[in-house]
Image (cartoon, rainbow, N blue to C red; front, top):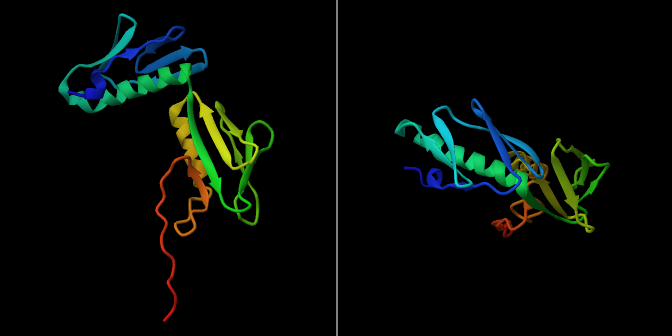
Length: 179
């Protein structure tokens, strides 16, 4: 039995959901999100909670996945999702250009313009070294943050680059000298 799949999902006030075939549309105060539901998985509502049920044990792999996707959609439309990034390095920074473009200066010969997809917002602190990526779709927020990190991954010798806030990095030891 799936431990995650058995947990009920509380439906907060102001959240409505509709299911059409294999898609679930969740609507809340922050917007609308769709989630896919595997065939053979059903959503049952009782006492203001959603319980995810499966038809048989061959769908055990999709039971917890579907529950997690529904939970992510409900949480996204109520509180939203955020990812924090830090830029470490001398002269490395980011700045907003308009409302939907982030310009990175990461030590290359040119600045990198990063267009933001719809539904994603980025805020940059005044020091221009800390970014917060936010939105209602957890998958999209994580993908945009990963794409920003991949512009200049942390260097294993000096740990310079773009990293997640709180990410633990192993610093390698450089050459000890020629003999």
